Picture 1 (spheres, one colour):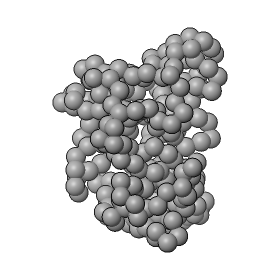
Picture 2 (tube, rainbow over the protein chains, first blue to last red):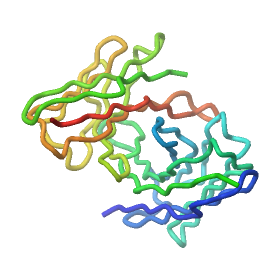
Picture 3 (cartoon, rainbow over the protein chains, first blue to last red):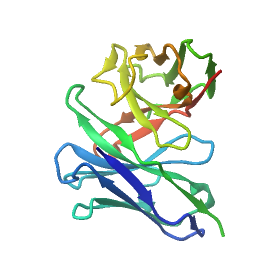
Picture 4 (cartoon, each protein chain N blue to C red):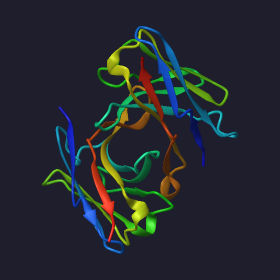
Length: 124
Length: 116
């Protein structure tokens, strides 16, 4: 059974760097055809994709946030870490991590399972 | 990049059917979208992918047979038959675009489904 859980600070100040950790179980991020992504959702607004990391350490970032994001993995700990620099109140959101899976039948990648999310508030 | 548009809210009575729509921006009529269900207080879960030919691949784990999809033109539909209380959720559609360093994932604004 795959599970993912996000952890990190609930409150950060403007200009600070946010560090979030996704701790997962039920799969290995060293196995081919697997990835982990981060997605956020500001209160009352749409989901916004942030970043992806694949089993082979290939990475993808949202073009609009690329300069502020870094995603890394620690396969020994079954964790993926996302850092976002220069936080602003508009970054207040629930941050989700999700398992990214290659579906052989359909021939595509997709987010099949998500964590429950962690709410991060940016305020002085 | 594509823009996905969803009606903010929808409602249906217990046991009835409802169809939710995700509309792609023009020039993206060949794109497939993923439907996600997000129950209150939980993270989203994958429902299924849909293109103009219907479902692509298989449904997400545990998705009931009451859920089906169709695609036509710029619209991607999610239909829920015999609605149950547990179907009251936010439904999001998403699509990936581009490749390599230009890859990105976009989402619609979501539709809040209320079961009456």
